[in-house]
Amino acid sequence: MPYYRFDSARLKLKIGKIVCLARTYKKHAEEMESKMPEEPILFLKPATSVIFDRQSIIIPERTKEVHHEVELGVVIGKKGKNILEEKAGDYILGYLLALDITARDIQQKAKLEGLPWTIAKGFDTFCPISNAVPKEMVSDANNLSLNLKVNGRIRQSSNTRNMIYPVEKIVSFVSKIMTLERGDLILTGTPEGVGPINSGDVIEAELGDICSLKVDVA
Ligand code: MG
Image 1: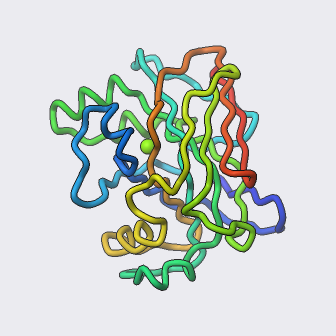
Image 2 (image 1 turned 30 degrees about the horizontal axis):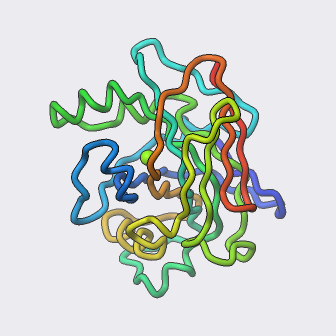
């Protein structure tokens, strides 16, 4: 099982379940021609999809269209259920930068047929993550720039303040559905600008000045 990588602490923490949100940025919902949901849309990625800085995304044979999605990741530090928004900060250990790699063609077919997104989102290597940063080093998680470049060209550029739900609300919402445990990771959704990646591409992403990540496509 994969462990988080922390810059500043010798913390050994296993990556638990990865809970992801969809359509949390209005402009991304618009580019996907999707309706804004009344409450957050959740799906899961397996911990086995995680890779780290300087590793490679592998495109599976059964997809012809794989997209990048750059996201703020929230690392949970303490077990909790029905967490109040005002208390959510107590349950957050830190933050990281994550890529929610998506087989878009498989996902679109699943959407049309009303089927789950597990295959589209769950392949090995489909969750590159940066080193994690303790929350004490982050002044405001709801105001962090989020950028992604492919082969040096900017594809996504936004800020977590454009999310329709603040981080505290997201932690609270998820904890009302499923118990959050130490080591769980929440991916908070992507802003606009998602697009295809192909073999040979180099992806570089940044979360404010606290996290960065560079991976390539094998
Ligand atoms: Mg996503």
